[in-house]
Image (cartoon, rainbow, N blue to C red; front, side, top):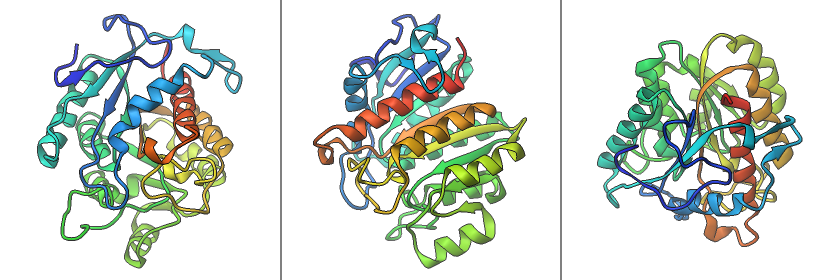
Length: 287
C-alpha cells in the first residue's frame, strides 16, 4: 500500500488487491499554481465517477479492462497551498509505485504535477523520452517570477532530461520566446498531433517513453472542462487515436492533467478523460 495516499472511490473495474495489480491509478489533487481558472484538484474524483458510465470493452483495441489487473489507490494527501512540499510527496509516491514494479497512471491536477513524476523516472530510465500533448508550450522559465508553475513544467523537464528528448504535439499557445525555444531546442510540432506523431514513433522504438497529456490539447468544443481552454485544437477522436498509436512504443508511465469539472456541465470532458484512461490502460499495461 502507498503512503500519503487516501482511497476515496474506484475507477471502474479496478481490483481491491494491491498485490495482484500490475498497474495503479493515482489522483493528484493539486492546482496551487493555476494561472487562470482553478479547480483541477477535483479532476481525478470526477473522472472516477463518470467512468462507470462507459464500457470496460474497447472496440478501438478489441481489448477489455476485465482482462487486466489494476488498482485505484485514490488521491495523494497533499498539504494545501504548499507547492514544494507537495512536489516532494508526488516524487516519493512515484518512487514507491516504481519500486513496487507497477505501472502508474496519474490523474491531475495541474500540469506542474508531472515534473516530480518525470524527475523520478529520469533517475531510473537513462534513455527516457517524454511525449507531451498540450495546447500550451509550458516552456517559460518562470511565471510572474515563480519557477514552479504549470506554465513552466516542460521547460523544467527539458532542462532535466535535455530538450532533445522532449516531443511536443498540438501546441497552439505560448509566448514568442516559448515558441522560439521549442522550435530551436525540443522536437516541436505545433497545431498537429496524430500526423507528426505517426512519423516520430519509428524514431522512438526501443526507448523508454513517458507520456503527459494536458486535456486542453483537445478543442474546447469537445473538452470545455479545463482551466485554460484554447480554441483551435484537435478532436476527441484524434486524441484517442494518438493514445492507441503509442502502443507500439515502450511506454513506462502516463499522466492526464488539467481536467476542471466545474467548467464541464455536461461532464463530457471527464467522460473523455475516463475513456483516455481506459485506452491508456489497455494500450500500455499488461494483463
